[in-house]
Length: 202
Image (cartoon, rainbow, N blue to C red; front, side):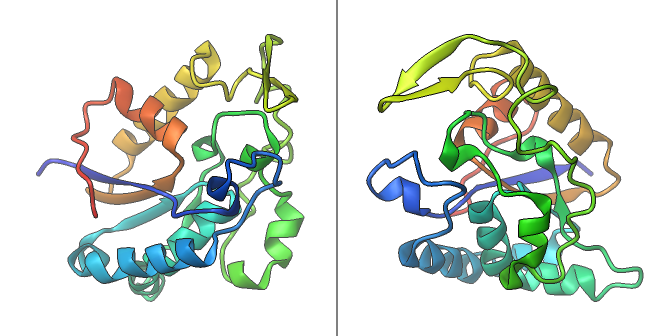
């Protein structure tokens, strides 16, 4: 049986409306929540067949996951043993700008909407965009904001390595039907040299 990976980009978030990249870790808009509901409605079969649910730790991907894949989440968490959502830091978006920088682990744990999600696997520095997460020093300007295009820059060596790490992690998982919720740029990196077939869910 061939392994199937279902890649889902998050629904509309606040920074997508007017391309305001200065919003820190923006949540979904009301339209984004409706889009997530549509995702849920159109993936009834997948909600009953997938055997792993993985998401980026940013708010917009977490919200897309818990709304759009709530049936899958409930089914997996009710198994014995339970299989909770996996929050994978290497699925975060690639750029070093406020909208692509995640909230701290403590802030995520204190958010009532994310109750029941285990954030203990997140590294202490997962959202710092430096050190392990940002190893180059080249800079560019985007909408009057200077940003470091390092580990999370779309064309950097480091982000390509991160995408390769995700592909290998997915390959080595025992599950054969996996749902991944992430972001446009990192998903493009993951699929760029990926052996997986890409199929739109909606």
